Length: 467
Ligand SMILES: [Zn+2]
Image (cartoon, rainbow, N blue to C red; front, side, top):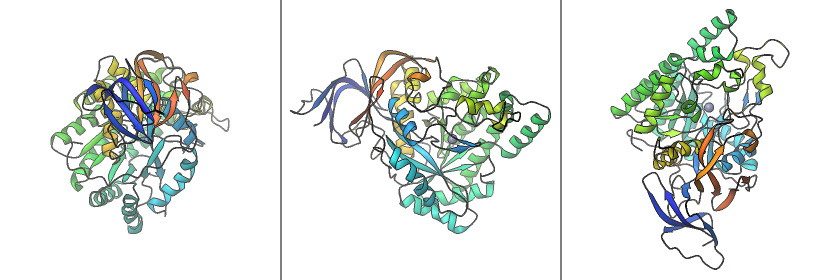
């Protein structure tokens, strides 16, 4: 035994109980009361603390090219930041280029991630080209290589049309894959954008208006209908609106394998942020919605109809956000010239655990949303997502009594601001272990660049709404 975390309260998705956690090498070797350390065992006193599985962030965009720049956190900065917030695995995106086989995209991104990642990681493949059978059929090869998760965009020029989306769903049902979708109505978004700009409406608020509740909701409903038609399982990423939430609940009640992810920014902020002086800092897609939508999301968090919480972590600097005022080339900017995305990978688990600590959900539910469910959905529950003998020793020690006010100076990424500035949390992680090695302790990153490993996931076959 190399490490013994003693006297804490172990929290899993199912229950909470007093127990010691023993780690041997990279794995959890025992969980139980009164475990005895060996001669060379490091003993950590966790009395009064919670011992949790490391979080799995199913949605990050590290080193992403977008809007004429690259997101501020590369694979090292992003995973360093993750580790310091108790996240021990991140799922990033490998976007397939035209004419490329699915696994080519993974190899290309992995060449960047493998040398940099400080925690474990895997990929969802962003579907960019299924115009030929060869491209579509290459999905199967990805599943066989341990990358069974795909994402389509209903919005953006590089996204799919409904026919292509349908084909991807059909294929995924056959080969044991999960299809994630960024659901927003592209055509309506484009029309509204043009109209607002023609009327001189350039501020961040109009980013929200061009991607309002109905623009997202219509696409959510359409995506669910397409999934129903094919028998495929569907994962709606960053769900942010009530119409979509209602459609997810209905489809799940009918027995369909429909799953939703939401993000802390939609649970904490509403569209009111776009009226702030620096509303542009909050520009992300989909945008934060009204209070009614936020309430519906919280209800889904509480009832179990939301499957996971992830971040969509994709930070840009203040200067880049300012391109919404003055573009890079000096010309006047508008809401379409603001790079989309915000920081969140370090604050996700602390925020959800803080909400649990305040009594809004149970700690078990927070663990389910941030660790257990992503592990099951993405096919890595044979390795991660729970505290259990035989699984990877991805462990967070959490102090429920430590009050923490988020400031960017205390974050460990590379960007220069956070939308979470001055948000107060009740409780905070004090240590993170990734496969048995300490990567964060007492506010400091202790991990190593390149120590993270690419996780190979199992094929995903979900028959109904239960995980
Ligand atoms: Zn995203």
